[in-house]
Each structure stands twice: as structure tokens, then as C-alpha cells.
Length: 313
Ligand SMILES: Cc1cc2nc3c(=O)[nH]c(=O)nc-3n(C[C@H](O)[C@H](O)[C@H](O)COP(=O)(O)O)c2cc1C
Image (cartoon, rainbow, N blue to C red; front, side):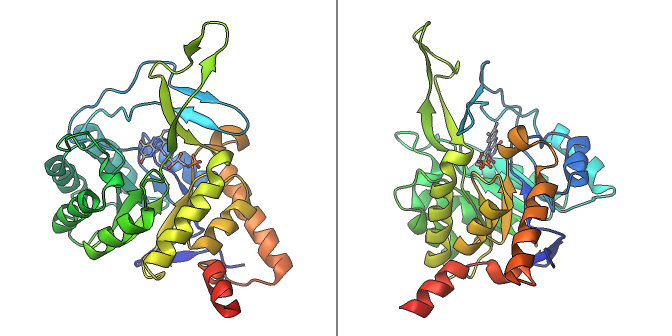
């Protein structure tokens, strides 16, 4: 079965992609992910200057969900240049560079730096609080703010496609997606973590995470990611590619996100539970399901639910 996907001119041998923030720190770790069957890798979020993360404990997991408040630690652009430069020497699979900032000017500054390294796509994490907003509302929760970031990053991205990473916490993820599409977005990643959530230790009566709250990921969020992907696909008429991310553990999960509208599939939390070769396992499971159902090309799954709904209306 043909699992490959060519998205905006970039060929991924299979649709699985390492999600941002999990393992995506060094050239060696990206290569290792590629060796374990990923079709592409995403860097963790890169800032224009060194950014300190939160104090430990930063992660707590159950079999149903993970809460993380890692706090996007990053050593700054010099380290990014070193690691991405090293990876690009003999890039085994496409690289998606994820950037983040708390102000539009900083988004532009980090985009300019990273574009010089020629990643295959830029992924813009707009889930951070906007320091210029009166209440520090994240860019991802305001269609005009998200559109402004998109427009300014697009102005410096040259020929590198810009994917906007959307948050399920927006009142209407569809409105944010449409505003970003009108501002020039080439694609979307949906979704970032949900929440925030909190977990309390019964004996100490204290929040388990030092940051008290954290973003929710893993199996529990899959129905939310499926709905968000479907909303974004419908609102943008399936014209822009979506990297569907959120709660994917199995090949059938991946296919479900594809039916909602995803062309590529981000995998993060599942690495901790199913092992580093989760990418290969998910591909084998997709393959087995498609062969059983007589599907020859994975691309025919993309947006399948929308086509089915239309054919029945
Ligand atoms: C430990 C951890 C760190 C993360 N760091 C980032 C990050 O640096 N940038 C980002 O855009 N998303 C980050 N995310 C969000 C993931 O990329 C992904 O959108 C989310 O976890 C949902 O996918 P999953 O259920 O497969 O993990 C992080 C998630 C986790 C669990």
C-alpha cells in the first residue's frame, strides 16, 4: 500500500510525524525518530532568545492522559542553528521547524533566523500568551491576533510553507483558521494541548505539577482533535493541508484523523506508552487496515468523512 504523502511539494514516505516538544531536541534524536519509522520530524518550539522552562515536576501521566507544564524551554537560536544545521547535512526525513513567541516582532525575528536553515515547513506555535494583549490572551484564541502573526511570518518565510498550529481552546477554531488562511497560511497543525488541566496529590493536598496546571494530551483528547480537524477542514473547504495531532496511538486513530481531514499525523504522547517505534507500529496498523479494506492509496482517506456526509445529504 502506498503510504506516502506529498504535501506542498514535500514528500513524506509515510504520514506519521514526530509532534513538537517530544524528543525533538537534537539532530541525533530526530535521526533516531526517523530510524523508528517516522515520515517526518518536528522540532520543539524555538524562541528568539533563551527561554527557561518550568520547575519539576513538569509531567504526570496516566493511561488515559498526560499533563505537561514543561514550559517550552529552549537554549535560543544558536543551538537551533547547530542542531538543525547538523540534521540538514544528510536529512533522512523532512524537518518541520516549530517557532514560538509572545509578541509579533519576536515571531518575525525567530522566523527570519530559522528560514535561513531551510526547514521543509515552518510550524508556528501561537498558543503562548500575547504579551501585548491587555489580558495576555494567547494568539491562538483571537482570530485577528492569529492572522497578524500569520501575515508577518509569511512576509519573511520566503518559499517555506507556513503551518499555523491551532489551539482547541479557541472559542471557534474554524474562525481562527479562516482568518489565518486569509492572511496567507499554507496549512495548519491541529491541535496543541487541551486545557489547562490540574491533578492534586491526595496526601499532600498539593497540585502535582510545580506549575499547578498543565496542557492535556494523549488518548483522552483524540475526540477533541478529530472534531477540531473536521472543523478546520470544513471551514477552509479542504484547500489547505492539516497535520492532525492529538491522541494518536494506533493506525486506526491515525486513519480517523485522516477521515476528519488530516494529511499528515503528528504523534507525541504515544511515544512514552508504545515505545520509540510507535511510528512504525502505526504505519503497519494503517497498512493492515487499508489492505483489508482494499484501499490502495492513503491519500484517498483524507477528508473522507466530509465526502461521505456530502454524498448522503
Ligand atoms: C511533553 C510535551 C511537550 C510539548 N512541547 C511542545 C512544544 O514545544 N511546542 C508545541 O507546539 N507543542 C508542544 N507539545 C504539544 C504536542 O506537540 C501536541 O500538539 C500535543 O501533545 C497533542 O498530541 P499528542 O496527544 O500526540 O501528544 C508538547 C506536548 C507534550 C506532551
